[in-house]
Image (cartoon, rainbow, N blue to C red):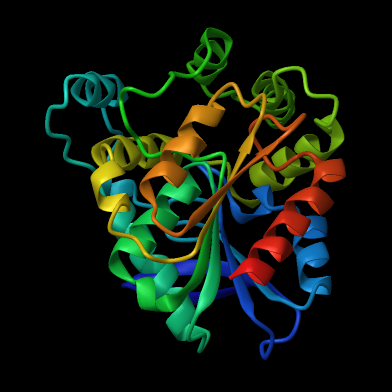
Length: 294
């Protein structure tokens, strides 16, 4: 693991494979650290001939945290989102996309395939708005356009996401396993051990739930990206879990429906998250097929 200064902040990252290979950069989801892209997934992707980079978004893990921005009023932000009122975030998804661009520049990478999971897919979309020349392609997994007309998370998902942050390592690990089990929507592919390992690493590296709150406000402030997505020409692969209860298939279909040069894939038995080791080869094969077609 290394750190580098970008946009006046510190970004922690880790790379796998040879720098000369085509690059893939992985953007984590809401409040998650780079370890949410399990090292085994990164190695599988690297073994296919890619230079793979995972990193901590700002306000997570070992990257710079934004304590001076204070604790946001998340309920007020949600109310503003649902009424299409202005939201002033501590930083924007565009700022987070600029971090990705800065990391690519610092690593001397001209172009990369940009993978984003959940909120990370929204950051990838902002990357395509602002830095399309740096993207060989975009892969959005379990993400959304942010359109208010799309199906909301299922009630059980909303319930676990509203739980207060656990106050010990043991409680955090148990709660994380439970949350992502709910996110799995009964998938037999969900691997609780994989999620527990991610949770252990997350807590031990830097348990920082306030970052989740500031990420949430940045996500809500970005609003609907539907009209902006229509201007994207970056080759795009949209992957959605068939049983994802948070970003249901309609969310991925909306991305693919808006982006001109896109392909939509729905994966059976996939819920929300990257803790499905038996499905990683399927995800990677869809990506390789996507490359062959583009």
